[in-house]
Amino acid sequence: MTKNHLKRINAPKRWDVLRKSYKFITRPNPGRDLSLNVSLNTVLKELLKKTKTTKESKHLIKEKGVLVNGKKYYDEKFPVGFLDVVGFPSLKEHYRLLVNEKNKLFMLKISEEEARVKLSKVLDKKHLSKEAVQINCSDGRNFIFKSNDSFLSTVKTNDSFLYTIPDQKIKQVFKLEKGALVYLYKGKHAGQLVVIDDFKGNNIVFKINKDVFETKKAYAFVVGKDRPVISLTKP
Image (cartoon, rainbow, N blue to C red; front, side):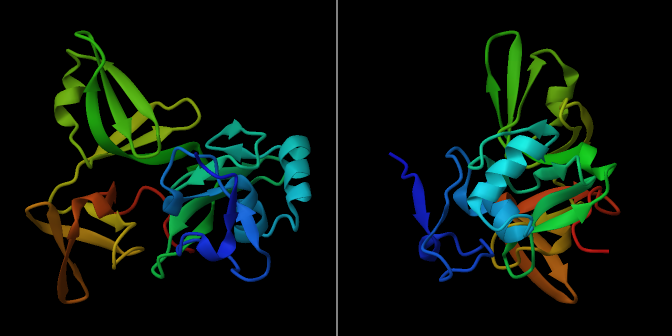
């Protein structure tokens, strides 16, 4: 059974929070990779500095309204995951949760137009029946298609969907292939934006400057072809 509390000293290393200022930190609701998500309260208090206390966070969430991927949530423990968008309608501000080159989670301010789209990585396909197939994605989103839909044959594991939020309409598919632009969000090279030069088993091969490296396909997130379709660094 999941505990309701989490000691700061035991929080995932990629959480960019103070470890010794207070004893506990809000644990996000279960269901997602703990190292790649934080509670809405932690976003407001630690990453964005919008509030100073949990009481202030609760007031902001319930009275002013905070959007996560275009929807209002009233639970300060709601998990905000990698590439999720947090919006403040009253302030007209929007932020996306990313991983930097120090392998730390951070919130990047983005435009209102960009806040209407999100990327998600394909994890697998599941046959619900003879007529329906479900595509499961990295952020918990599921897309259901008719089994005879020709679109299914073009989608493979580790490809990425660009879709609108909150209505979740797929706009574009980015393939994990040679020449694809990928954002590394796990491993030693987390936070790097690289181009796939080749494949080696379950690894991708890429260059940083003139040095050649390998990392797992599972650590790569396709974000575009010639340029990323979302902002990944501060302008």
